[in-house]
Structures are given as structure tokens and as C-alpha cells.
Amino acid sequence: MTLPLIAPSLLAADFANLQRELERVNQSEADYLHFDVMDGVFVPNISFGFPVLEVARRYCQKPLDVHLMITDPDRYVDAFAEGGASVIHVHYEACTHLHRTLTHIRQLGCRAGVALNPHTPVSGLEDVLEHIDVILIMSVNPGFGGQSFIPHTLQKVANLKQLLKANQSSALIEIDGGVGLNNAQALHSAGADILVAGSSVFGATDPVEAIRLLKQSGQP
Ligand code: DX5
Ligand code: ZN
Image (cartoon, rainbow, N blue to C red):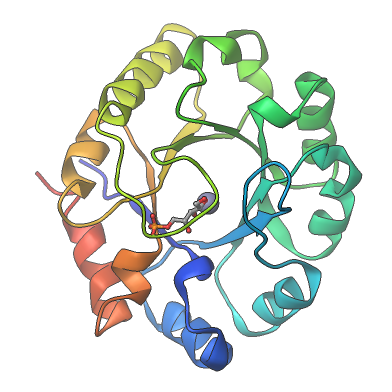
């Protein structure tokens, strides 16, 4: 069985020591840096944007996995591509013309991701699957780090895996919210390829070791 890809979420990092935190991510087995953008409208919180992206691009050697929790993301995908994003996730609930948005993200040279809120069914993606590289399943209501994993999400990941198989889609499944050593293996076995982890990584005494353990936890 392949090991899960790990995407530590910068939201939980110590911003007083941002450069040190990014260097820790560089030293680790992380596969991406997850970058949460919140606009205070789509979600009830405001996080960070372009100045922090610039620092992440300068100091982080891992590909940037940008999660846009913003309304009308079309206004900003070009700027995030220009800012160095490898993957750009837009929210299904925030896109009126999802097909257009996804094809545009690919035209910009980035991988196209779609994020689903906990209440959004995976079946809504069926008609755009061929335009999606990564599906980000939210396992908490987006807006804050450190929340508890919503248990039903495990079944949702398994259902999505089935849907992808039935449609011969090679899209990856990413899971975000409340992920830690207690549920990483179950999530990976259910079909999650990429595990996003904020507080369980940056809240640990040794984030490099926490990332290593998360990766190993993918082994049955
Ligand atoms: C939540 C964000 C997550 C968050 C995860 O809205 O999208 O990426 O940083 O944090 P933890 O792992 O602490 O739940
Ligand atoms: Zn996120």
C-alpha cells in the first residue's frame, strides 16, 4: 500500500517564527504546504493572503497547496497561480460556473482542486470529474483550525473513492480538518491520498517527527 501524502497546514504555525516553521516543513517528509485563505465572508474568519504567500514561496521548498475559502474565487485564481500555487482548491459552494473555473486553473498551469463542505454530497462532482485533479473533503466546517473531525466523513471518503473508480477518474482525495494519528490510518484505508494536518503537526513538540509519524500511520 502506498503511503499517504502529507500537507501540513500553515494556519496552525507560529507566525512569530514563520521562517523557522517553513524550514521545519522543508526538513520534514511533508509533500505539500497547505495554505488556507479565508475572506471573512465565505467563512467566519480571516486568515492571510498574498504577503504571506510571498514568504511561503521564498522559504518553503514544498509545493504550495492553496485552499481558497473565499466567495467568487475566479477573481483571485490568476493571482494565486502567479504567486506560486501548485494546486488551487476552490469551494464547490462558491462557484457558479465550476467547469469554467476548473479549466481556467489548469490553463494557468496549476492543478485544479475542488473543496466540499461537510454537507455537500460528492455526487455533484460527477459531471466535472475529468477537469479535477484533487478533491478536498472538508472533515470540519471550514474557518478554523483545531476543530474535531466529523465522523461521517470517513464514509464520505469511501463513497468518493467508489465514485472515482466507477468513472475511471485518477483525481486524488485530500482530507482536511481534525486529522491526526488517531484517524490517519482509517482515512488512508478509506481512500484518502493526501492528509492535511494543522494542529496535530504544529501543535506537536516536534513537527518534523509528527509529519513522519503521520506518513507512517498510513501503513496498515
Ligand atoms: C480549516 C482549514 C484547515 C485547518 C486544519 O478551515 O481549511 O486546513 O488548518 O486544521 P486542523 O488540522 O487543526 O483541523
Ligand atoms: Zn484547508
